[in-house]
Image (cartoon, rainbow, N blue to C red; front, side):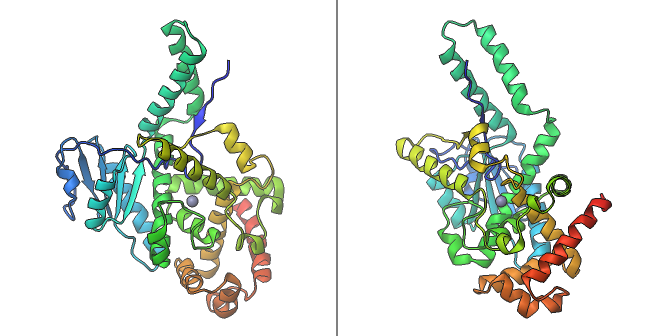
Length: 368
Ligand SMILES: [Zn+2]
């Protein structure tokens, strides 16, 4: 019996942009009163406000998400010289055109549909259940329940609920920072972007990813650092891209995003009902070529490590603000090093920077 296990892909992980008819609404539970969306006055909808955004959903437990937005905005602003724009996170993954217009009119230009852990589990649960029913016609309900329970356990991957929640919060921070970054330095292009694609935008992919990784929470940051060192220990420089490639390459997950976009368009054409973008674990692996030593996922790890290296070497937490400004004005990383590198305590060429980076990286192994 074949059961397709659906999983969200990692990069746009947890981000499912779902467009469906408007949600009903009710009272708002406002933490910090600020711009109050009229959506919060609709029956059955709750709102939580933070300093940097609003969370809208059908449950009252939204405060954690508002705190995640604020924490991510603080981290973003620590590294960049621009303010994070107001963000609206819509839980349940549904944003109607009407709601979007309302939010945009109230200065929430940055709208992110989001599925909580629980929402995602429910979707996966019902998808597997209907496949089982299809493939096992006449099976006892109990038998289906047992297989279903076993499959759900397999999907949980041994992760505890709190671990899964931390990953979810970090993924939210990551996606928000992608938007803030492009919105801050490439404003006109940001307006044209359909939504939080993360990469494939106007910024070089390495810099875009760096901005997102810098906003992640401590738990994920620690795990990324550790994974980078492990990969480097196993495969040395084969685990990472030479800087000349890294600064110019497309995000190794870009293909996957293009496929997801196409899938989303296809499903949107067919129906206005809620759609989520799923791929099987095997599809993700195959398409992202996860099996070689320089796996697509290493791009995130290298971005984390390279950011640590740059901040430590220059002693400047806002080093990427300078680089982003320069590149947004049409410059390249090579030109930036030539003109500003020495002021920042860096070499003036990519080749010399590469040598420094490769001597810094092994030093982290002993520090672990
Ligand atoms: Zn990203």
